[in-house]
Length: 348
Image 1 (cartoon, rainbow, N blue to C red):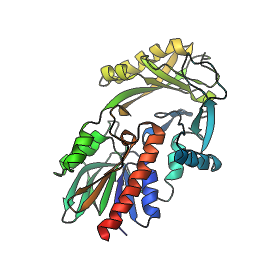
Image 2 (cartoon, rainbow, N blue to C red; image 1 turned 30 degrees about the horizontal axis):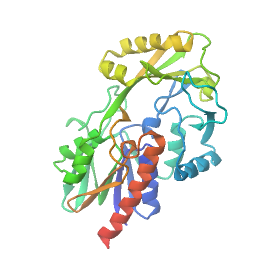
Image 3 (tube, one colour; image 1 turned 60 degrees about the horizontal axis):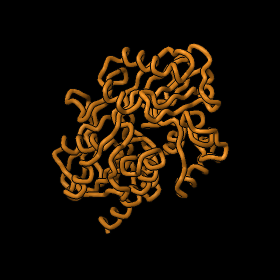
Image 4 (cartoon, rainbow, N blue to C red; image 1 turned 45 degrees about the vertical axis):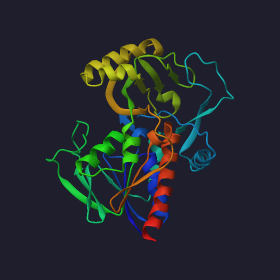
């Protein structure tokens, strides 16, 4: 049995952690958030429920279709609508199914994460080597802090240390590389060159309340791929919220240009930009800044398992899985399987 630390309690990390645990290893999962989910995050504001990140998932590969069918049988996944969500696309009741968590996308990850040893609200400050084991230094995130966490964590934060025989990181690649650098360690040249090409589009997301009935399609969502606003969901229509609740995703170009702008300004601007798509105005409630929303570089889908001296180190996530929820999930599973095999060889 090896001791393994999985960084990130999203869908990739949670599936990977269970696979490692089922193989007989002792697994600890750490995450900066105070709830599991990662980019399948959800939030409640004034009795309204919102999916903040991913709004749906698709299941195209046989392996993920099997997972999705199991989650549906277990009551945490349902079909939302069929066909394309694009504004100009014709209605297609026989098109590809778009699936949602029940009631939220985060519920899927909560379901997967049952039985895991979770250490939430913990920012990874550095990953280093201590003799023959990995040393992961954690900084506790203040529960009342409104500022987003930064990597590496500031030296003033309360700290703790975990030791492991192997580490699997599902953080965005720039954060993974930052905590390795903070610990004074580096991966092999091949792994470094692969990870160095990672890039992401950001996404600014506003949660809002419509001020009147909307003109959204019957499914309660619309996508405009090239707009300043690229996606809107009314979660009351989608079946997530008892009250009208809008998630508004901005496009990559807009998000990049406004990423550091004043939150009140961005909230108001995105609500105004969304009004023509909604057919009504909206009252913005909250802004979320997704710095690493969508991977844009092709890193390959082969699992990445490397060494930090005598310690095994693996990387997983949507950037190594072709994007989307399905890509992240499969990347986590495949990285865990590769790590299990490498641990067997390492100890054999």
